[in-house]
Length: 76
Image 1: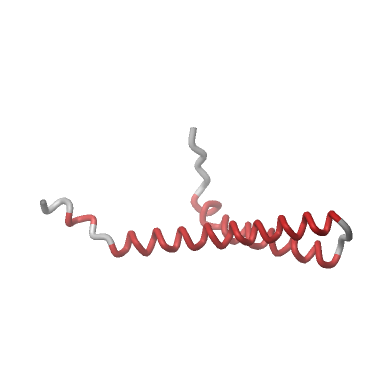
Image 2: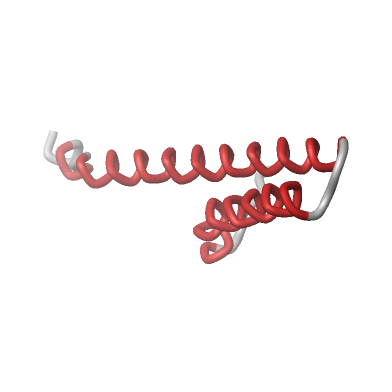
């Protein structure tokens, strides 16, 4: 079973993850203390990393698709 998201949500996911990660980091810095702060900081950094990886993979895939000539297979 595969999970499909609507295109606007799918395109916004890296930015949503990044915003959520920054929110977690800011809240851990300002609003909490102790182990809760550490957990929120780690979660925020993880979300930022996921956001960056998703954005880079999509960017790389789309660049490769633009460079690839799909019509060359039809000519053979």
